[in-house]
Image (cartoon, rainbow, N blue to C red; front, side, top):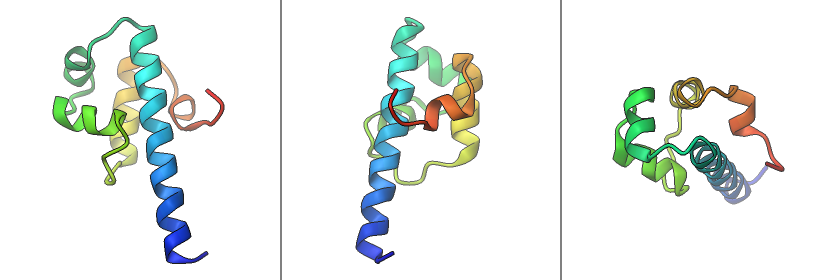
Length: 81
């Protein structure tokens, strides 16, 4: 895979995870502030994740957010949400 293609795929996946997090958060009627508190993730960092602007998205963050939302890791990373 070419570097340019890899970077595009990473951006697409980061945006996908962010959109899934936002959807589950809204379904739970939860604010970013509350989710960031429960997941122990900085609120600005959470906002960047939800908006697909965070390129350094670790598995640890995704797991923390999933646990706080009461969903699985795979729920946050799957396509076709």
